[in-house]
Amino acid sequence: MIKQMKYFQSVVKYQNFTKAAEECYISQSAISQQVQALENELGVKLIKRDRRKISLTTAGEYFYRKSLVIVSDFDRLFAEMMRLEKGVEHDLVIGYLRHYDGSELKETITEFSNKNPEVILHLVNGTHEELYDYLRTGKADMVISDLRRKPSEQYVNYFLTNKYVYAELPVNNPLAQLKVITMDDLKNTPIILIAPPYQEHNEEMFYREYLGVKGDFIYAENLEEAHLMVVSNKGYFPIEFTRKPKESSIIKYVPIVHKENHMYRKYYAFWRAEITKKYIEEFAAILKPHFPEESMNDNLL
Image 1: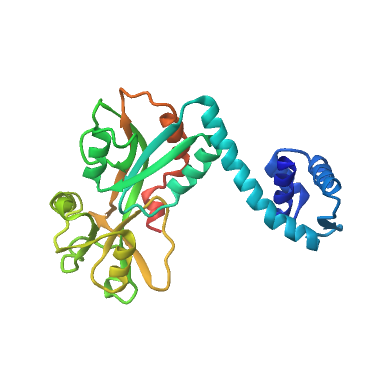
Image 2: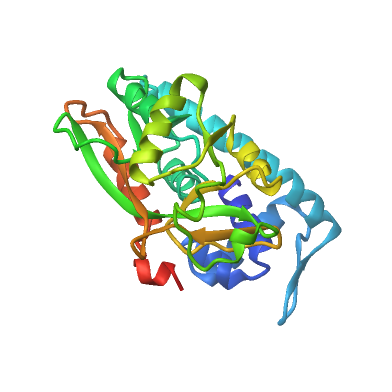
């Protein structure tokens, strides 16, 4: 009955038998038969059918809500049962940067977890140096970070993408009207970074050397605070995107350029080369397609 419940939920989700069948990888006639078999077993009509659309009966609406809870509980029960049967609990610790603000990791985790429900994922975040330390000491199995030092043969250096750097500014800041912006333009505007006090010196050195920052540094504890500091006009936040970002009525993203070239940073997934822990390479293979590359010219349009 669990499988039939999932078919029924898919039909409700799409309000269409054909689309539900595609999601469940069965034929349209088969999913229709399975839903009908569920109705026969329950002894109630769940779905009203006509040529144009489907709708739920009163009993169908009640059963749909309750079935979501039942299927969710069953999936967790099944995953735990498989862990006990195999006698081994797999886990994977993934590290990512404090200032990361994309959807790629969420999409990867969803896809990976659907394929490997027996694996428990743990997430940690930090600055570049903190992530490197997590990896070096075995506190993380893989970290997703920018490349700041020469690649080492001790680690697998799995290239993901180039992320282009923008200055996040409030729309009421005059600098937000520029098409592109340089460090000279920003020299009197503080840069907002996310780092704990003991990492501030390392971050300042990097941003002065790499981006050529000339102004003052101010710090936020987390990403949300950094965004709030921007809209409060306390400074600009250097944010990175693979794709051209969508702007809002309160925020503008201005490309940061050096010698007319849009600045970017290389991002990699890193893991220790001598460790052959199961699932690391599979996670990386799923992660890679979620970081599509985009040309610099496209980014500046």
